[in-house]
Image (tube, rainbow, N blue to C red; front, side):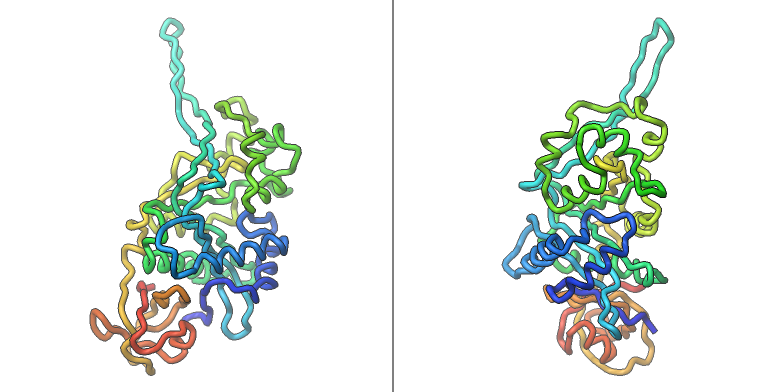
Length: 340
């Protein structure tokens, strides 16, 4: 039997549950701050983003929660930013290779160079993926990650043609980022956590004013900082594997604070989006020969879960009563699904 969880849009009643998820992350998470006022702003922004009048990608932020049906506990979160940039530019370092040569001395070297980049009309971004440690078991992380792609498949006009994900960069056992300690700390009178928090809640003017504008040569940095450029945080490794399996690829950009990797994909080529099938619920009953699918209600009141599905024909499926209850669907409702 599939696990008894449902993914749904966040609601104001989830604030205490959200805080529980945020505080369960030992190193903190930019896109899911533990401060209550910041969480309230995030919830209200998400609720506005599901407005039916929105027809194109903008600064909307869709936040989903994973709820354990039996207890109502919030087990995790995942989200989508419809378009990064806009009034708050999206900052990254582009990693380029440049050649330095001097034939008379037989010197020919290639070196990496970091160039500060800001984007005012960027791609969509998936993020805010977090699962409480007590719920980190088979299938739930994948449900959190992939269900949001079903939402994107159901409402493609709300998102950009390109999709990125920023993965948390490496920090040591004390929570320190070697990359930040070697670059950012010298320009900001803040800790890595403080700067990352301000950036995460959209207060980015300090980056514009304080971040060095000139190229940075990693060869001049301590070896510890060089080693973590593009390296993912240990807790983000499962998320990275899921994204790579979905067709994302590593880009030449990294986070300006911790040097974490940025991966990118064409929206239409993301595996879940490419393989998703939209159909309708024809029957709600006990099933005879089902298969497990990731299924969602193809509506702005989006809900998704892992469930048994019986395929009747190309345009119709049957589901169990409990699945209909989880998804809040009935006979005739449009659903979107992929085989597990």
